[in-house]
Length: 180
Image (cartoon, rainbow, N blue to C red):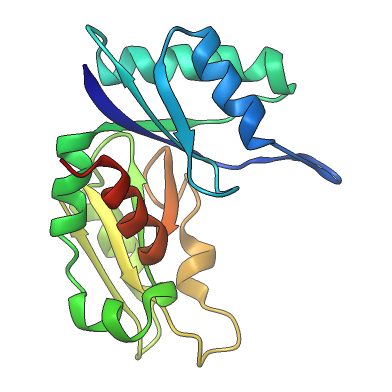
């Protein structure tokens, strides 16, 4: 059995409606996924499966999500080894220690290109950092700026495709869930 992390792009279904984590776990069980568990109410699912590719799991989860919750949501899946590699690759360890909620990663379905990174850099303030590691977009954003232009720039169009962002606290805790 392989352990996987699934990240939902958005768990807001509409005005006042959110995905209930027990319903998300039930959906995973209905798909035949083993030991589904969630990290608080953050739209993160950890589960086990055998004999399925990451892309097949993404398609199956997205196809099951829409009829169950009434809305399409992009879902990014990584196996445990890839997630542990992502955690270890954090390019901002010092910032993560001091300000874990200001360090984040946009986990991309397809690796981000150098051209996309070049387009994003002008949105970073002087006290912000932005880099790509293994195709994902890492950032250290400013809480000193009223609103970070960098965070607002991480749309699918500007960021080069489907992805979803998580802060260091969530990334680290998901890493603990798949550690072994």
